[in-house]
Image (cartoon, rainbow, N blue to C red; front, side, top):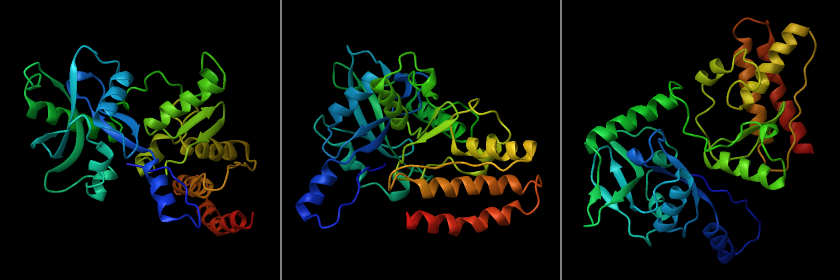
Length: 299
């Protein structure tokens, strides 16, 4: 779950409350067999967004059959009991009661597994399951883990473009719609040719571990999903091939994530230098960190 709201000094209690009420959160909804090939569907929701509104957004995103009746269910344990949300219930308010590790999509212990499931409702009010519920949950969990390990592709991108230059229609609306669609799927990186656009998610995403360092090592820009590691990798190997200094320009407004992006670049360059391609590069890069931070604070 993520909240995208900046702080304003001197704001009263009422103002802070109104700002929080208008904050947008990312809610993951697992459709199961209702949408084959989709592990979860991320949607944007506010604290006051109802379950009915959330279901409508999932139906639109996944293009589900509108003649069917759907409900949202909350589970707190793998294979455990499901709590069906009323149409006026607010999923974000329910999420605020979850443990922090669940909100950060980190593994929980003791069989706990907090998530929202999309269910089809029969005419008699019962929930429609195709096959064994336990088997479906097991398959879904295995697929989710395989995606996180990079053994399966990420959920369907719903037609968005990883490079804005590839958009069939190039205008302001199509650019913003494409960026919004990717951001709702937690894809914060998008190319414009060799330029990388980053949208600050204001939370940590599990896309900076050693697996991703290895994945983007010595790959051509654009062959994989956009990532800041790809930019760092291209600059690093270009330096080795051409024996020329390379420069990566990071720009953006205050709070856009420039410092954190710099840290990710340094992390990837340091990891590459540890492979023995160039001696002494690691200490030089790490030593540049405080200087870059000081320069950023002086701007």
